[in-house]
Amino acid sequence: MQLTEIEKTEFRAFVVEERDDRYSGELQRRRVADLPSGDLLVRVFYSSLNYKDALSASGNRGVTKAYPHTPGIDAVGMVEKSGSNDFLEGDPVIVTGFDLGMNTPGGFGQYIRVPSRWALRLPDGLSMQEAMAFGTAGLTAALSVLRLTETLKPEDGRIAVSGATGGVGALAVAMLSKLGYCVSAISGKEQERDFLLNLGAAEVLPRKDFQDEERRPLHKGVFAGAVDTVGGTILVNLLKSMQPMGVVTCCGNVASPELHLTVYPFILRGVSLIGIDSQNCPIALRKNVWCKLAGEWKPDCLMNLSKEISMSDLPDSIERMLQGKLKGRTVVNLNA
Image (tube, rainbow, N blue to C red; front, side, top):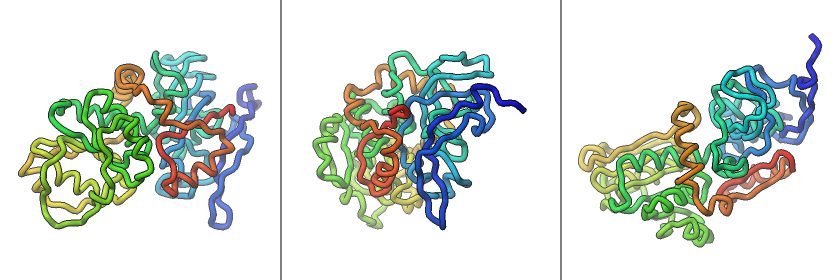
């Protein structure tokens, strides 16, 4: 079958390949015809680097099953071709989560082709760069903030945020602070204290204070709520440190996926543990949250907590992310 002109279009993509049981990525030329089926073809202008992308780029089969592969779980750009009544050519759209960048070629390529149900229009008040300064991390942080604000008011007490220098944590600190909450940022990076205070944190607490594996079922209740991004012992100690009717959201497991504690925080203090899943978040809820991110929840310091890189910078940035050496958000300019 003869290819259309758009199908013949070549573009740059960061492609990860397996060679001799090792994984490495490089910029390659691809054609639109190589992309999977889908009713929405999007020309990508910006993406962002997330921990899941770093895992995909390093051969984690729990994220990506087959290689060669183009990571990038976030993308923003313009609709190039649409088979959906919901989108017109030229519409600016955001695509995050679902299977993008996992087993479907992702935002580290200048074109993606996806089901239209994965996309939403870029809200008014949000530039493409700002959208990727948020990305999946921002959506995850905002879902956490949404669940906290449904129950807790600023006057109810301090809100702890773990992994506070990471993408989700930093954005959660900035959003909660803007909404008037007193935020206790938890971090193992003492050198980033000023960074966190500039985001709006009222105090910075050392991570080591939350890594004790004490068997005591409860600690003194000092927090009204928490956004946990790391899991493991830190999540356990946050749950034990909640005030009565405290609320904790959980969205990560970089420390550990296991949770070793009693039911006492739940049955003696009425603590709630709420899981956050941004990958498969329903589109209606996504639209609602993205509108908040474009409006009253957008931190004034948003672009100050992000760094822009080119596609050629990805290998170094991925390695630094895996080593825990990045802070805030990393925006990828696909045309730089």
